[in-house]
Length: 217
Image (cartoon, rainbow, N blue to C red):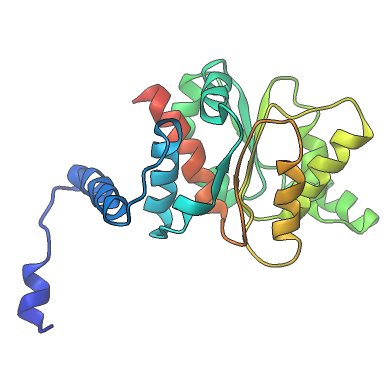
């Protein structure tokens, strides 16, 4: 393909039209692949594909029963979100969340969290989950990086009478990533999980935003 041909394929769009066109292209691609997403899950999975350009998520995104409706109800009632990275926190639409009465937290850079993690020889992500446990309102955990965060959540559920309101579990990588997701899949806590190695902070933020935009746009 020469330069003229490539240029002829460029779509000249206004900034506000780019996202709309992107979702149209995602829908067209899913249709060509013969993939029909469940209506309740459709915009969440599409937003994950939008942020990653990876259509494998159409097969690996896994939802507990009524998960999108449960998460939206929590957000509507002012639930907070706890993430395991500042990148995910930065990507979540905090204005939309604040309109519903919620706030985003990330404790990874907290000096006390770092001190305790060093003393105990565990990750800051694990200690951050312990810190989040003390938030006195419903919390949606949005984990996009650290499998140790999911592992610690699972451990806390077994150690004491405590349950998170909702878990978004999409850590990315290799060590313990798939196993940590499987731990959450075995719980009775409502969840949105991406099976396998893929995920990331951007994916965690995309899921949160998909839920928020259905409530605030």
